[in-house]
Image (cartoon, rainbow, N blue to C red; front, side, top):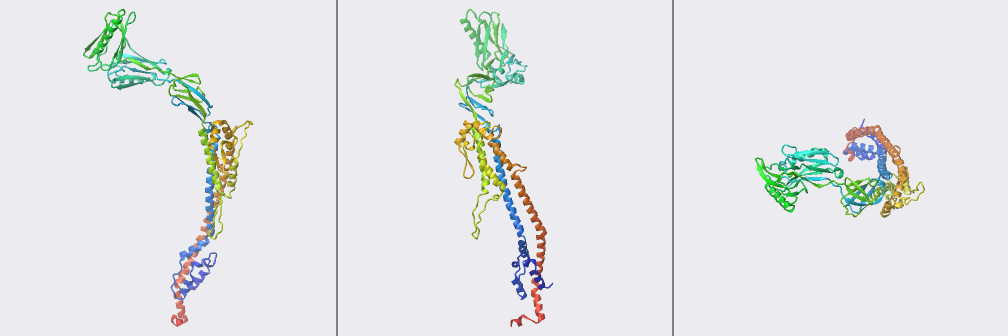
Length: 588
């Protein structure tokens, strides 16, 4: 094909004269300049093809704009759907009998002495509590020893619980109670006793403390130690260099009047000092009671194993002596807590009282010294208030999103024409009907099924009113007053006599929109998704079925024209030569 034919073919092609106006892509002045021998840059094939394709893709841009609109509609509708579901969740909470509308709280006039908690649904009331005494644990402690590892004298001790369980522990060298540490371990190994033994040490020495694991008289226990009875007693040897611990020793004679003396020892004493103290006490007693003397004498001694003390009768009569190295003293007897509730006496093995008032658990902290502490059981207005205010907040979010779709946004284009527009869902029938449902639901009026009177028949009775923009406002004073004085009426308004009050009524209406199976939101979203899928299919078919072939054809046409333009000057020169023309003669 000649260059002229190629150019003519290009000029008559679809790219120049068909559905696309692409004359601007081919510079005709360059073609004419080429015919006269002037230089020309030729045709930009890529730019020319792109311009032609852009014009051909006009329908596709319309479809893509529709997809953008559908995307915006889907996002806006999803946001409204989420907001409506949040309102439903709030309504479900208000409609649940075990929810915040039945929560209760207990207020104490003096929590340093008595506090309490109340189970959900507990009846309101005021209770006056007097704490006489707290429940205590039983506790005993031993006399002091020099250290936790000092060898104890040979003896035994018996622990007896209030329930009748007993256990005897032997002490002294070779026995389970060889030292205070060993004795504590042996006692703690017997879990049937319900006690815990602990070795306590300070600057004066060491002693064993035994405490019941639980308070109350049912958990009390006693300790008895083996006492000696006879005419002569010698203590276990005290190792060389060791001293006695603090102790109380009582010696009781026999016969009329049972003469008796008690000697207190201090930590660090020796047997010699103890013997002197006993003899001094006996002498003083006998001087004061010559008719009933205590006929004993104490003598300190020693042997290869250490020092000891001997107490013997001076007339051969028997006497009784407590075990001086391992005596036990009761620190506290286990007792039950004692209190009165509205004047009615109650006791408890612990400092927690349950069952006295249905649903209420009292915690005793300290004796009230006869003064009553007032405990008020009432609905927990704070929880109810929080639930209601959450509903109002979520409702305002939902109605705000809906109303935004119908707000007109003013504007003008470059020509001064109005471009005022509404939201992308302004024409959506689902959103239009939802707006009506939201606004109408607020006007709900509750009428008790039994025609009884009620102080709360509308949201306005709770201080909840609608603003001009459709949102709600809460009068906190009115709401708090209704919650504290008319809780039952508040509950009836929201829940009705059989879950048929405001909450369920509104929830059911919203369910027509939010149901995941066939709710209006899901139907709309399915429709938008189907539209979007169909448009994507059309765009894909258009690209593969038409644009791709057009791009191939136009690229070939423009490339041929470009080649023709490049060879046109040479062909013109050859033609002129054949016709006998030359540039010099024609220009002369």
